[in-house]
Length: 400
Image: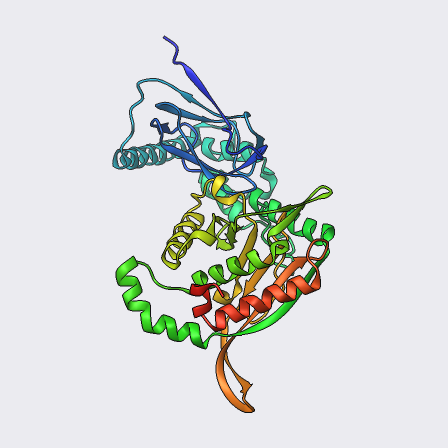
């Protein structure tokens, strides 16, 4: 009875996603897989997803790593049947047995070469020559009677007579992932389609650092999470966004859409590129909720487990280049949003307070914004308000 073949198609992974790229096959062609076992990773323009087996059976791969497929395209098949899963140790023993038999066969063939008067090449060497299309005139036989052996052919491949001139440049070309292509396309699009400007300011982090130092142990004991800088910046941005709603708005055609909620996107660097999961309704959350959500989303992002919903709907973005040592930068807007706040590293600098030079921990902050919708007064006032709230954290609690 013929085994049934189950055709697997590229699954729909989001409403706006029309194609995916095969990042890697976790199972080999012909390997036995089990139902719901992860067999491949596929990249979309937003995230990486696991492809799981839809049945028990033997995997038949139809598309290769790096291939880009449309949603619904045939990606692989599974041949159902009573297949035995080979133990790794059994497989290794079998491979050793095959190798020994091949060596034994070669010895026998070598011994019988003398009787093969119609050829000056051993059978094993002849097959390699035919498969690789090697010119036999370049090979000197070392076998009995000048016969060409397997070793002669392999040595030729390892040490070719004519060496190609080496390029002065050492390069390695790698095909761009779907996520990387999308990031590149969007960044160029933002630069070309928006009137992006950046305004800067500096924040004295003394008060926040003292507050964190004083309460970090009790905060962690009560909430089970560290008190980081991101919760302070998120709270400050939410208050400032309510006061300057244009910074939280976006352009849709010939209309301006004002968002009632502060859905804060946080930029997370992953091995496959930058992703921006969203903290929804951040204005309603406390410091502990924000810190927990940041950790949850960042962990899922680095593990490639973010869902499409967790990356959609952001209204404003915060990115922290300071974790990589950046002192100052001009972050690029995360379209279709209209603004992004860039955090940087904290460095002790001399500042003048009451005509005295005092050393304070300073962070430069940058706000990149779309000048089509946000005027200079609004952008500067927004950043100054964020500065005020961060330099006097009690304002964050009282929202004044």
